[in-house]
Image 1 (cartoon, rainbow, N blue to C red):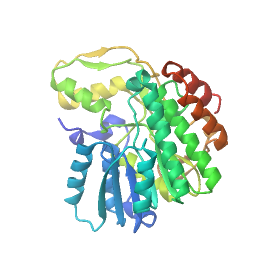
Image 2: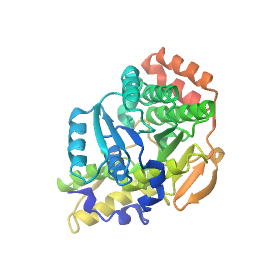
Image 3: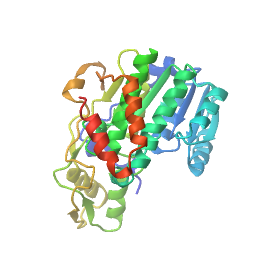
Image 4: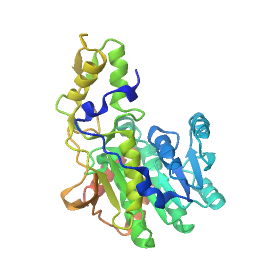
Amino acid sequence: MDASVLAIEALIRREEQLFHPEQVRPSIVGKTVLITGAAGSIGSELCRQLLRLDPDCLLLLDHSEHGIYCLHQALQSLESETTLVPLIADVRDKARMIVICQAYQPDIICHVAAYKHVPLMESQPDEAVRNNIGGTLNLLEVATDQEIRSFVLVSTDKAVQPVGIMGATKRVAELLVSAFREQTGYPYLSVRFGNVLQSNGSVIPRFLAQIEAGGPVTITDRRMLRYFMTVREATQLILKALSFSDQADLFVSDMGTPVKIIDLARALIDQKAAGESIKIVETGIRPGERLEEVYLTADEFVKKQIVEGLFIGQNITLPLEELMDFIEQLTTSPPDQLKKILLSFVNNYH
């Protein structure tokens, strides 16, 4: 079963909010764009959207050899004069990031690469810190040193008053972006996603596989609510935010009202197994999860909706020196203490 053939609007309970790519062409045309995590579901769709805007060069960076090979092959089949450069690299390797940026001199960095699976990161907090915080810091330092003036971090609504490791590491990454923006004067920014329906590891593929197997469909808690967006909405949020980067450092999409996970499961069963008896079983909330997410705190109040479907928030800015001291503390702390240290730090700032 392919999620692409689903009635998406019936699942997210609203119309998909898309815009014409020509609106953001001036921000992209003729530029060299580096996309980290390019082989993932969001990164690969972002590459396809970017190709329509005639960049001079796309730098496709991922640590997955197979993923980059497949992406490169797929993009080469599209009609485009854009140069495509496949790069096998890890954002945690700062020396490699320096070499790549010196060689290709990107104008824009779209930092999509991240560890995003909540329960997995709960059990491996040191890896989440190294990748989500360390990788972001590496790229920001390289971007600053090489005067790369455009940088966008893909973040998550789980970074808002986080309760788990993944969200907390992404919150620190957001704070780093704001601190580097303040220090350099470059319009660096973060975008916050809700749950992306068709992304790798999302609930949709898992529910579909369970339905195909005859059930049961497993949910954690029937009360759980989540904001959802499509992969096209997610990638277009990145592009729209880049066009307004001079106005703010934090952008979110209008994702309507949150959807109950149990309602999503029922809608999928109705679409794919109408008339069949598919049970829904609750398994309990997992570590690092909560019943409901928000995408902005009261202190990050939404200033205005600058274009349809796009809100800007006011992020707090901490001194870069304070953040660097905190990151140094993380690198010297035992893994079993990282969650406590992270949550204490990020939830002291609203």
